[in-house]
Structures are given as C-alpha cells and as structure tokens.
Length: 249
Image 1: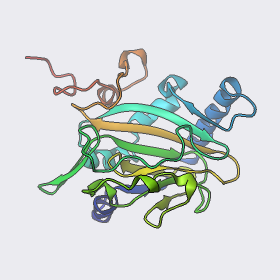
Image 2 (image 1 turned 45 degrees about the horizontal axis):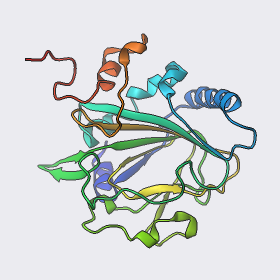
Image 3 (image 1 turned 180 degrees about the horizontal axis):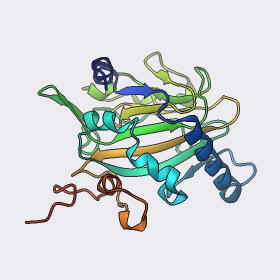
Image 4 (image 1 turned 30 degrees about the horizontal axis):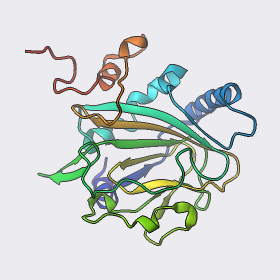
C-alpha cells in the first residue's frame, strides 16, 4: 500500500485495485460460477446470492490470503486480520439480492464496523474485498458509495438511500475491469447500483475483521479443508484475543 493509496483510503474509505485477479484466475472462477448457476438457478433468474464459497474448491480458498490484497488488509485491518464471511452475487438486471439501498456509515457508531485513525495508523472493523469477475463500466452499475462517509458525524439522509430512485450528487460509482478488487470499510455508506450493463455482474465478497471481532454469527471450520497452509488456517480462526493458535493461560 503506497502512501498515496493510504491517503486516498483515509480520505475516501475505499480503494479500487486493478489486476487483483489474474486472467487465469478469472477464467477458473467464472467457470465455477457457470457450473453453480447451471445447477442451482432457474433459467429466468435475475439475481442470486451464493454462500458456502470455500466449499467450491481450492480456487476460492486461494482468495483467503491473496498475495495481491493481503498487504492492503494488513494496513487497513491489522496484521492479524481474520476472514469473517464470504458470498457471491450474480446480477443479470436490476437490483442486487438485497436491493439498491445505501447502508453503512460512521453514524450511529457500530462496534463491529468502524473507522478510526490514531497514532499514524488506521483501525477498521469489518472490511470488504469485492472482486469483480466481469467488467463493470462507468454506466453499468456496480458499487456506489459516498466518499468520506466513514468519518461522518451525522446520519445519511434516509430519502437519499434508495439508488433505484436516482443518484444523489454525493454518490460515486466505483467501477473497473474484470479482476478489480474494491476494498472498503463497512463504515462507508455504500450499496449496489442497479445493473444496466450487458451480461452479468459477478462479484465475490470476502469480508475481514480484526482478530477479536466478529460480524457474522457463524465461524469457519479450517479443519474441513486439508489443502490450507498455516497462514490460511490462522485467517479462518474464530474471533479471539489469542490469534495464531497461541496456548491459553
């Protein structure tokens, strides 16, 4: 993470990192999505959310500790970040599986998703890595957010939340080619813009938390996956103050 990127993340609450996934990774991941759409979705499906991604195979589990992204997480969340939960959204038209409402924001304070800056270090709660498996053009849809709202002292106006009713001037589109990862703090006011692009919007969400904190109610069982290395197993630990398998007193 460069000093310029650090400045932009502190200012905006997000970064878009291109080439976070290689062309080979994109081909493999999109093939897996094709298989699951064929087996799990109706032909007229407009939008669908998939869970249980780590069970899809090693290509998804490789994203637990992506060499291109983990250095960002180490600075944004802390070196002992943990994976909180994952899912994949597919949108063929219209709004996402949870609609088009902006959510999040620094006010009111949420102890699981927050942004603070102290002693030249940023501290974040739940933090998102959203991988685009398909191109998202400037007018297609994709992620919308209110830059700087992760530091707001006032609640976001309710009448501005529905992105399906028009875009307020304060909302920015965050787009990019396939392979781009949008990294943002959940304290940022954000949402999914209605999809108007050709083809599908396919987005894999890996969400991370500081090691003692959890947003999700359930935790991963690293023992279910024999192909994981030690670092990946640590990232899958449930929330605890003794991260990394240190013995209890």
